[in-house]
Image (cartoon, rainbow, N blue to C red; front, side):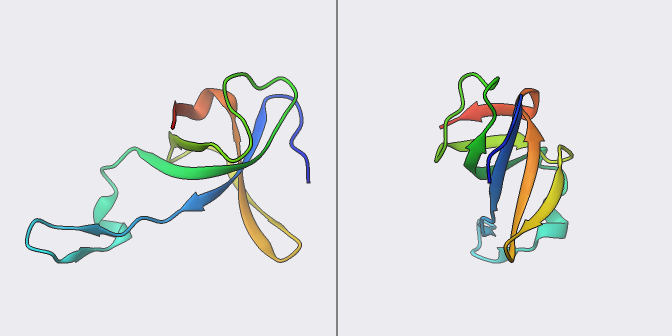
Length: 85
């Protein structure tokens, strides 16, 4: 699978979040967090500053899901990326 133009294919990284007292915080309680973390699988030829295997933070409302060969991915645009680790 290869992204084209300025699209980026990622896998979402689910992070467990704990409160100060050690309680696990569920996803629905983290809706105020605007950016999510993902690992880049493929980048389009017009994408700058992002490479395969980079860890990125992107807008939680960006892109759409896609299933490819039994695995789930998310397709986003380059402008939705805010941080590259």
